[in-house]
Length: 423
Image (tube, rainbow, N blue to C red; front, side, top):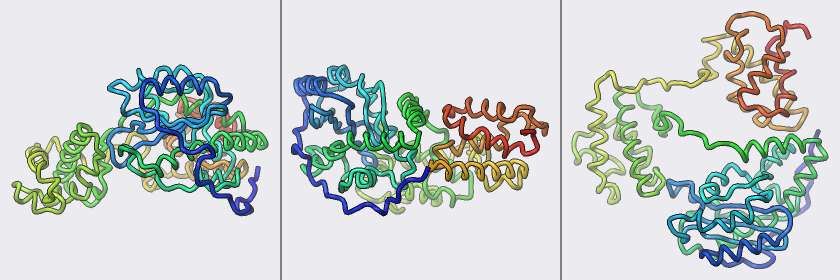
């Protein structure tokens, strides 16, 4: 199912401002009630976007909400001034829009923050995910608008600090443009998916994203500290852990991104230097700066807690794994599993090329690794499966694979993992 060469597109027409101008930002209960009435009177799907302050704030909250519906125009909502319970203030809006099909680009990024405000769609169309299933090489919003609609959507403020108030006019222009063509893009993606007989695949994926529960926090998140791989002693890891926990608490309390409280490089430097006094701590890079000096006691206290830990309570040097080990260790630890993974990856690559769908959308890489490592009893016992496809299908189903994914991947995976089994 090939896709037309994206290089064959003619020059795109720049889209510099919304056709109807940048609408005012709504921020009062009366504004919300009026917006709900306008949106309820519109027709068709609802284009939705939200701007967050990733990299600036600890929370994942939405600092601006953009909505657009045919017959209603574009609406910008600032939820911050709506009081301590913005979800209650937005209840009239939720009543008007939650029953509609929402159109978002990369919906998994915005849905959690919108859900905190009581805004949850009953149906979803994700243009980014639809583009992936349609085999488009570039699936950013600007790239897809250019590819499918022939318009140039200039990006520039997506990584801005959207908690800034008041919001600059050019930021609001950018925000309004993000939903200006989203409904037209949805229709073009839908046509492409239909032509490739992938409409049902997309529907299952959209529903999976819509109903996906928030992921629980990963254990030992402190081990993701940049530069931690350079440390060679467990006591140093303990220092990183205690500093990370202290930083995370301060970041949460102040709603500031952790890296803006204390960079990872400073945490690793403190773990290596093991300062014994505030003077020694402040002599290290970053810790002597004016913004850090007021937290000196916090940081030194974390270092002292790590130093006081008995050896039995120090973290292990190797990160504990919930699942298979890193793939580069498979050949040494379990050559049979390594061979299974090689065969399975080859089968998945062939499927990906045949159907023009990225491998990671056919099946999550983690689920494939878990299957090949020791996912089936036959792998552990060395027995030959009497029903290879049934065994593989059961594992993938329990792992959350959708029906369309299993329909495609089970036969070739069963053949790759059980090459000696009868067809």
